[in-house]
Length: 365
Image (cartoon, rainbow, N blue to C red):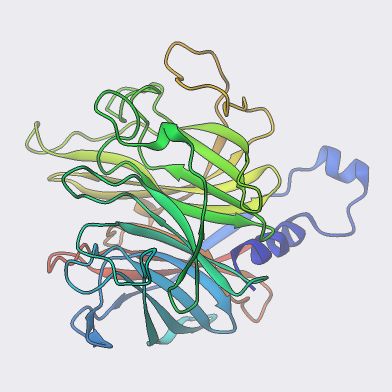
């Protein structure tokens, strides 16, 4: 049981099995998504002598079991994931606990040195009882390109996904600093999807305050033979509020994606604007009419169709403190059959931030 299985169940849940072809043609089932609860995870704790923090991704393992990855670049504690228990019911979260720490290993089976990787996303592959995880890249003097590796549940490297060369760090092209792979999802246990967090230099600029083209690439890749099956362009949203001071830092990017069905993904956008705060939105995207850009090396001055996108959740609607939300997964069903949807935030190991868990219920409207 994992994200893609619950995604498939969600599709059946949305469409229903009794629809005729005529019904499907003329009706467009919609979702009702409601907030159930929000809690803060205690960051003032040590688990297996490691500092809990930087939790950037979450995936469902079955029952009440989940896995989360820390984006610690072996700075505070060795690079790691945690397996944990999260219990909830229809009224909200009941409790949570960290059960096990798994340290990530390099090619030689050793712990990573500081800044050799930047772990960001984690997914469970049930057919092989293994994990895939992404690194946004190492921040050493020469920079280490991002990667997607498969590992055992004890952290030993098994294999790596052959990443296209356009996602390398170069002076005048390729990835931007801190713009690598934060997102990862799996389709039917055989296909990996990932996306660059910010546009590569030859595709376009970073999101600003004017509506425009800010494309990132959604990559669909066969993990058995390494072939890239498709790439689609997703247009990052422009920012609606300027920073304070006016020359302050701002960013909008994609920290996570989640497979739903053959033509749909859910895409999380997270922005931070200095002096204003965090903004988080969840979109559903359709690839049906989008251009397959896998053979296009530079999108600037190229004519293509973006994936379509539809807003599902705007976290600003709830009038609650929003932190740096970066991870999401479906969880166990509620007693009434609604799907649970969980989000987790990365506190950046900062005393000014929180590790938040958000719980939503997803049902037919």
